[in-house]
Length: 101
Image (cartoon, rainbow, N blue to C red; front, side, top):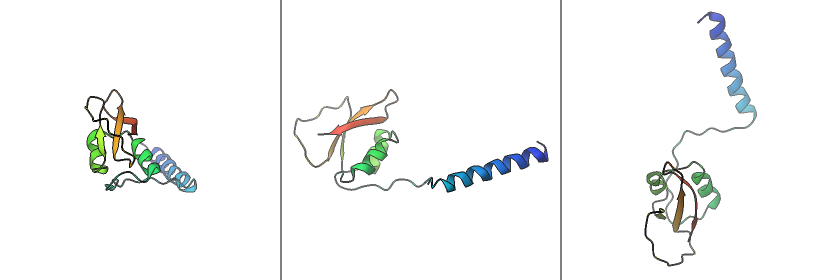
């Protein structure tokens, strides 16, 4: 690659980072912290579900919430504390939604 090509790529990278910073975008590479107890912050929970976690990731981040997958059997008890989540999965087995029951 010529010096002109490398210079152009460097300028493009700097402009991209500047644009993200100017827009107030925040990119976080940090792992989510596990949340103990039932779900109380629904916005944070929905944000987590939007990342399409797998069952292992869900159980690691929300260890106290019972995850019920489509193939699982569950009792018919009704919980009002967001401690049992019935998940909907995509074709790859990732959680794409669901509801508390």
